[in-house]
Image (cartoon, rainbow, N blue to C red; front, side, top):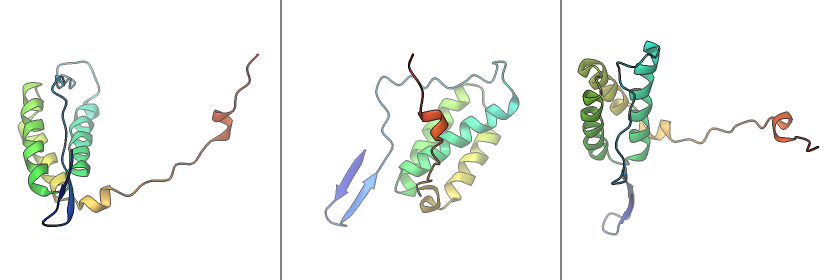
Length: 112
């Protein structure tokens, strides 16, 4: 969600979760390499940190995510550490757009 605060003259953004979202995160009991179970929480917490303009909103949304990940069998110690590390990151460093190179070989094809 994006909200404009006329008193502070700020645009504030917060995470929006659809009511139909069932939090379909990968179970730790599934047969996947262990690095996957580190990368999923890290990318989810970074996503929340990028979206939430205030640290309070990040903390609230990351707490909700932490609860959902605990239900899926993730380690509290591991995911709380990831949430704390991501919370300490400077949000503005996570926001810059990264230019991607276009590979023209992949964009052109021939129809027969």
